[in-house]
Length: 224
Image (cartoon, rainbow, N blue to C red; front, side, top):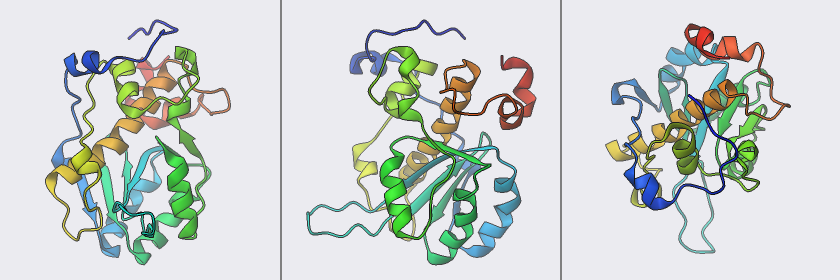
């Protein structure tokens, strides 16, 4: 795949709408987790992941005096699976070592607010990469959102439903649209990171030599 740099402007809404729809991770590869036992079942899978797509969702607040109690859902994704953690104290304790692990990279968009919410829960985020700031090589000094990033890198339309994004993420049983939406944000982030790495467009401060062989070993020959 070749990318012509720089690009003078972000893709228009009309152009993005004309693109093929993003193919999300299959529903059977999305795991909704709400017990410690489920956490233990996937612990080994998470620990060997060099890079994790990361996002979180919170029940929206509609009045200025409302107190934000999120995150209510935390999403982590590899290339094979997406894990949706319905937040509880026990699950936060399980995730804390992952987020504080400096040797495991977590990538996503708009993570400043996530860091604030996690800090309030006693969790510091380490080795976090804000992907929206990784598009300067394209000629964009301002942050680039996930929808534009997917259009630029993969020429696909990444759908973002406002009705789903502002839905109740604290509900006990998530709807299928919520599950698919939440998984897509984390899954797309890890795809974007890999493509930026492959193209050599990540900031020089981000490690890459050994990482290229770790994130998806079976693709090592195609990464240059």
